[in-house]
Image (cartoon, rainbow over all chains, first blue to last red; front, side, top):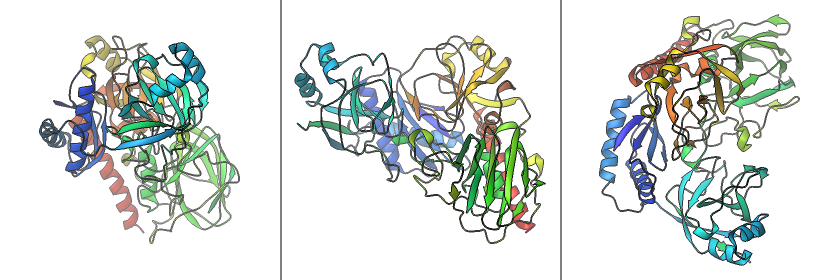
Length: 213
Length: 314
């Protein structure tokens, strides 16, 4: 466990060096512990694969003091239960009509129905948010569905598109360019800037995709 | 209200950004030169985080539909109000019907216009900033265009007098090539040679630069580690992709990324970097986090001094 500065107003607590599901889970648990602690001056908490970054008001709390406080909370969190206390499970209803579904099925040597069945059979964990507002990287996709990204990214993927790439799946929260394989769509609003928090999902949550025939 | 009579190619509403929504993947955003915008707000007696106009890439015009105090600054520009030349970082009084004309920007990139009461567009996630890639915030999530009318907030009780100017020593040294940096989270992954390149050679901002990031031109920073598992990034982070070309993340940069971050630009010096035009020299100077935070505090106290001096002269 160590603290490194990320500029004047953020500190990254490094929890390990190897990207594993266990370490990511520890990052989520640690982030939940930091949120629950409500430290004065903390503005934002961003868990990621190897640690948690905390943004703070450096005008009132200098680096050394904030790093010491964060490390103390994170040390205690190492003995927390392995699932973040604030984790939620979301059901996202999906119409599997994506433009790439047939191609994905063919590349995987499966029927489109099997792709749908395997995609909707699992519970995914929300690894982290980023890339664009509200985008959540979800793991882990069935091994038989894992494909590299499309060689030609699309200039515009509509919001609500459900897509896969590599070992992950996700839902496009906004109309953005994108290179993942689109296998379906959902009506669920993944991001709404007029709500706070604006993203439906939070790192550490769980997601089930429900097949809507 | 103010009405845009002629829009430059880039014009948005910005304030100091969204400090609480990174965990939802929302970048901090806000003014590229947040110091300039805050200093202008301080000069005209606004709260520091009032929204103003961020203006770039050309000239244009704004018509005032009510009496109003305003101030311009950040990039240098040739500007007139009702035909009379106006100075930077100085309160100017506009009468209803007057037109502010920005002829062109003479140096720097982002010109700010702060107006008494601030631009009163709805707050989203604690900010009135425009986030163009997400089509939200600011004025309907988009660039401000010709014929748009923008509402202004409540006039401050005691605006500083016309002609109040902030003393130049309270402003960033925009003409300086030196930009302070602190060691980034992946500083140790880079060799002495890479650090030598970063801190002892000269860079410039390339034309491939926007609100998301500034790509730099100069010697390649060697020995980059390829990509790492994504982690949080911040404004000012200097990331080194595989080809060794440093990219400094700016206001609208994504909240997470996988390129190693060798260093981070001191917040106090981000305005200097933000206002660098392509080709102008840039030198990075390594300081400790304590020094960098002291510089940031100094900027905050300078903003306070500007506001307090203005209020005292009102």
